[in-house]
Amino acid sequence: MGWKISQSPKVDTVYFAPGNGGTTNNIDISVENIASLAKFASENDCITIVGPEAPLANGIVDEFQKKELQIFGPTKSAAQLESSKVWAKNFMKRNGILTARFEVFENPKEAKEYARSVDFPLVVKADGLASGKGVIVCDDSTDVISAIDKILVQKSFGAAGDKIILEERIDGVEASYIAISDGTVAYPMATTQDHKRIFDNDKGPNTGGMGAYCPTPVIDKKTADDIQKNIIEKTIASMKKEGNPFQGFLYAGIMLKDGKPYVLEFNVRMGDPECQPIMVRMESDLYDYIKAGIDGNLSVLPGIKWKDQSAVCVVLASKGYPDSYPKNEEITGLETQDKNSYVFHAGTKRHDGKILTNGGRVLGVTALGGTLEQAIKNAYTRVDKINWPSKYFRTDIGKKGLT
Ligand code: AMP
Ligand code: GLY
Image (cartoon, rainbow, N blue to C red):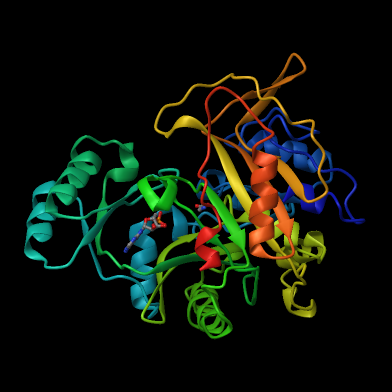
């Protein structure tokens, strides 16, 4: 988003807090330090865009609004769509938004009894934020029992796992649908498909996302209209009606089954890595949409324009992610220039003139192409030029879109 918005003629300087090895104008303030961020934004006449979920869940928007600072994102209360899965599921249930049937538990014994009593496969979810790792998709009751123990007994996700959801597993085709809203209307961003599992062919544990492409053929026009009307607009209208208006990026994680879109989860921000292919395809000025989103007059703008190309982002991670992985390894090959591709940094830092790894997901190599096939080729060509000892990536990003 910073890369995209810096291209706007209406923007002087883009600051990043705390930033990484790929960003300039880094401000050494952590996302938890809301008071210092507000002071910086005030002194530098900033409009603030919130990237990750944690500061939104901590009420950064509420604090900035109290100080009359311009900020784009949902309030703490509206951010519950992501920060509490129990809250989100109950919201969907009371507003008739299609989602998998579910039950909520705090007691492991009761959860296990329920698990043994149902005759459909289950997914176990921690209530709170867990960096995309708090969901365990189960094949049988042994998996379910160990997932219940992991979250409710061993407390692997801390207080985020004080409550769990057991919900029906929906086996279908997954896609991401992201819209931008000013609290009243919502405009769709381009459709995408993430690759959540760590290994090729969607094997292994869930991650924050290992790659994404845009647009995706799995959301055809009819399905897109259905999602826009019956999920996105219904959510925005229901939030407003409940006195909890939602301003920001609204991300619906969708499972398509028998032509029907089920909401698996909401995120209250851009997706990562979905954001990268969306941004490189976006023709319109992102600043205009953010500003109108803050001012509550999105409806005066036309729909967002997109490049008539495909885009793919391949995430380069450090081996061991989503569990433990090494850090501080030097990344080489970043100097290559290529007009079809971009290297967006995530977990990196600058040290002594070098770029070092500093997180699980390290880089998002993102390419455009005339076709999806070409975009995939362009992305992997660039991927091959970049190296560090623990570099790991999936080799099948975008393949699902070709069939
Ligand atoms: P979430 O964090 O809720 O998006 O869940 C992470 C991932 O788990 C999703 O992207 C899906 O791949 C999978 N998942 C979540 N809920 C379900 C479900 N009810 N049925 C099947 N897979 C699911
Ligand atoms: N890629 C999914 C997410 O950002 O949560």
